[in-house]
Length: 234
Image (cartoon, rainbow, N blue to C red; front, side, top):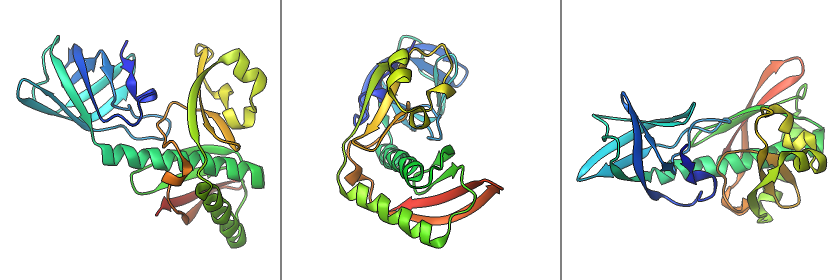
C-alpha cells in the first residue's frame, strides 16, 4: 500500500520513492506526495526523475492503490525515483479547498444550508448547497462574513480521530461522516479554528490568511431547493 505523504506533509514539494509496480503507462510507488483526484479536488501533476531521465506525471488516480500516469516508457519496477509536484497548482488547490470548507461553515451557520457538492480548480471553484435561492443582499453578506473570517488568520489543522469518537462528539451536519464507508474506522478531520470541523482527505493551507479575498462570481440553479455558487480568490 502506497504511503500517502500528501496527507501530512502538505507543504513538501519533493520526495524519493521506489517503483513497486508498472501497469502500462502507470506506475505504483511505495510512497507519494502526488494527490490523487477525489473529493472535488483535482490531482497533482509534476515529474518523476531517475538516472538522468524525466517522466512527466499527467494524472494520478486512486483505485485499489495510487496510480501515477506518466508520459513515455515508465521506469522499471525497483527503480528509485525522485518526484516533484507542480507546486503552483497544488497551492492553488490548497487555498480553494480551505475556502470551500470555510464557505460550507458560513452557509450552514448563516442560512442552515448544507453543502451537497463541490469542485475545485486552480483559478475558481463552485459549491452546491441546499438552499432555494440567495438574494443579492445575501450574496453580499456571505462575501463579508467570508472575508472577515479569512482576515482573522484562523489556524487550519488536520488530525486522525477514531470513528466512534468522531461520531459521538462531532456535529454530523459538519463532519458528514455518514457519507464515508463503514470500513473506514480512522477519520481524518480538518479543523478551522473556532468555526468548522469536517471529515476530509484533501490538502489545505495552514491559515485562512493564505486564502486571499473571496468573491462570488456567479450562480446556477440546480433545482427547486438547491443552488450552485461560483467563486474565486484574489
